Every structure is written in C-alpha cells, then in structure tokens.
Image (cartoon, rainbow, N blue to C red; front, side):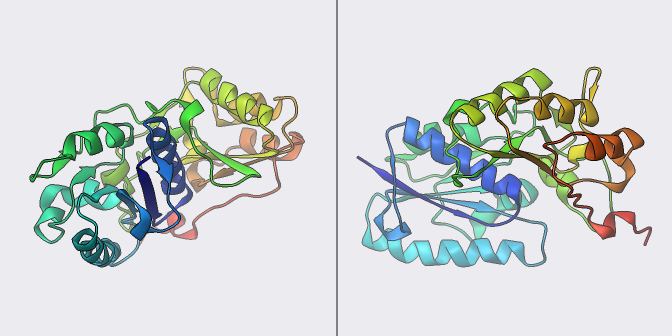
Length: 266
C-alpha cells in the first residue's frame, strides 16, 4: 500500500485543508506515513501570511530533493497560499515538485498524483474559480481526537494593507448553513465534544438570510455538542447580535480572537 506524508505550515485553515488532503489520499488507497522518508508521496501545505514564508517552502523542498534521490518514484506536491500567491513561478526554484495546487484545489490532489506517475513535467492547478467546499465532509481525516475544525467560509473581502489573504484565498464564499450543521452532527456522532468553525473572517459569514449569529445558534443546538469555538474574527463584523450570541448560547466558549492590526488605519 502506498504511503503519504503531509507537512503543514500556517493557520487552522491550512491544518483543515491538510486534513482534507489526508482523508482524500486515504480514500484513494494510501496509508499515512510517520516520516517523509517513509512516504511515496509528500505534500507540503504552505502559508504566505508571514514574512519569508516562501523560503520555508524552498527549504522544505530542498530537503525532499535528497529524499527523492534515495527513493526513486517519490512524488512531491505543494499546496496552500504560497503557490496561489506566486503561481507556477515557484517551480523555477523548486524543480523537484511534481504537483502544485492552489487554496481552492485540494480536492484534485489524489488525481494529480495519479497523473504525475511517469511524467517529467509538473502538474499545476491554481483555478481560483474552483469550489473550495468540494471535498465531502465524510473524507476529512481530523488530526485531533477532541476538537474538529469545520470550514464555514473561505476568502476575505477586506483589503488590509498588511495582509495577502484576499490574494491567496480569494473573495468570500460561504457554505450553506444546513451543510455546516450536518457536518457538526456527524462529528458529534463520532464522539467529538468540541468544534471550531473556521473562516478568514468567520464572523462575516452570510448565506442567504443566515448570518453568523444565526449559524452559531443552529450549531449550538446540535445535541451532544459540548463546546463551540470560532476563528478568525474581524472587528467590523462584531455586531450586537454576535455579542448576544456569545452571552446567551450555552455551548459557545467565552473566547473572541480579534487580530489587533485589523483595526489599524496605517
């Protein structure tokens, strides 16, 4: 049975994307490897938020180049924010990469690895129009036995001068509330006591007539759920309705993550 290894840099959203890739690969017949030198395919999920983030990618791929020399047939994939930001130009420095995907294309990773066998040219999928919620919730291989991440929205419509997220994750796209609730119900049925709702500006969530306060109320009502958290919030979307939800909903933890730089006008 072929094996995979995933190295993840960055935020909870990247962790959740890596969990999706892991689940998709296992569904495709792979088993998880404990180390990169035991794997047939290695996937590096990157972050572009912090300075010199791209250098982490090149250092990681440089180490994998030596492994590929010792393990003929090993494939290396790169995903996340760095390739979405810099595009296929990363291949000019990372020549040993076989597969490149953007932030909205993780569902294609298994198929791209299959296609990459026997090829010399790398395969690239950076389609920003792809459905970011395509991987089914049932395939996500959650990495924690206690807390499960649930992505409720992708992207950001703000244009803060310090932040690259709108360029790496695109504009805001929200999942239907009933899909979010169904995923939480399935997680609780599997024994997860805690769920964290994810989005780049999660409290900007709106799908139809359902805003974020409504979504919290619907998830909070899932029978068997013990704790409910969310991240990351934007100050502009901290409304009185959200404040009421934090006060009144019994399973919502008294926790609010607000990046202070979001309030800066400099």
